[in-house]
Length: 497
Image 1: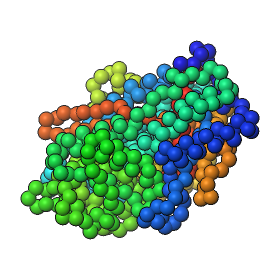
Image 2: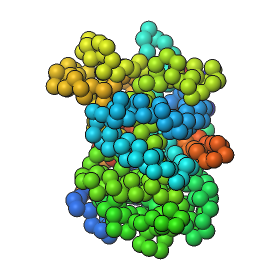
Image 3: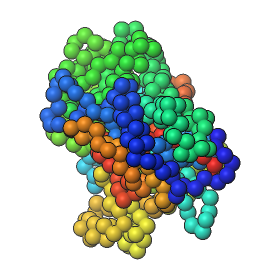
Image 4: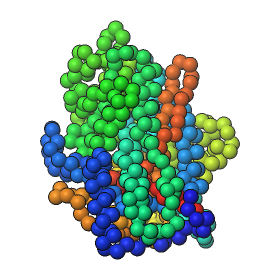
């Protein structure tokens, strides 16, 4: 660990000469290109067989993060794994919060389509009760008021397509390499090797997929990755595929919804999911299906429901995807709701301490409260993937245009206030190759990964915390998605605060 003196976030990053920054940028980009820290270039359409790649957006320095809060985030993950597994199995709760009769689904067509399909499948009889979740809980540091110690506050909990685990592992290795090869030119003399925490996210996420595959228990079966057409973040997915094959001898098939519409079928005798009439699927891992644009027609919904109807284990099931809705996150903050799922009072208190204030716009006076507090708020819909939220001064005009009946699909959340003055050097690659590192004041978001396998007839629940990521964006950028171009991949420098 670093020196016990309190870390000065406003003095980060240390000053570099132009020559030092240029050298570190060269080391970083060549390491990234050599170690699979890659994206496909931003061209449309993407060629079916890629002929080039660029390095993923990255930071030159790791970002400082208090050791005590990093350990807290990791400790909380087990409770969150259990919590969301239990939510996914609570049909009554999900029907009330997300359903099309009384919940979000009656005003949000995307949620309503998923819920209605799930309801129809329940009426038929769920064939495969086992569910797998590969989760990521995202946090920001919160500075609070009046010099209070930094605290850890949750941004959101992701239950579908929780990405960047493998590339984040490579980013952590990149920063360890930069330290090992240059000592960062001793511009921060308190920096030590054990300030760079290990990151083994790839093996951890694959462990969850392998556990589901083993539970399915069919020797010749494979895992299906459901992917988006033209996916630029393909290497983050491929590294999971390679780990499954090399460490567990499990083969992967990658297909889009449109491809599956032609290739997928269900064996009428066994309810097994079969691809191209020959390959049985043990586990369906969704890296698509989290946004309405993945369902441009009824055909894509039909394919999703076909996969759900089968005996394959889904990651996530529709129920677990619905459990990750922002409305669920908000309802959990209401008095007594968390106790429906967890019994340990200390655990409940610790989880609640990680939350900002939230309320629904459909609540009495909820919209007016959002107008009054607009400069301190973000409004969130039931969407994943970045670029969906409404912030601060844009809120009043948005509320003026939002039909009252649609308010149920939105929540208000108090903004997290990160430490001021923290910076970094950010490097992005364009279609013509690497750009120079740009110094910017930044905000860094920590994500903790976990998995849970649950829902079987024996009532057992296996879960584990398995790794972490950091995404860093310019302070003036409200959104935080790497894939949407707002953030860069980063890692952690453990500090005392």
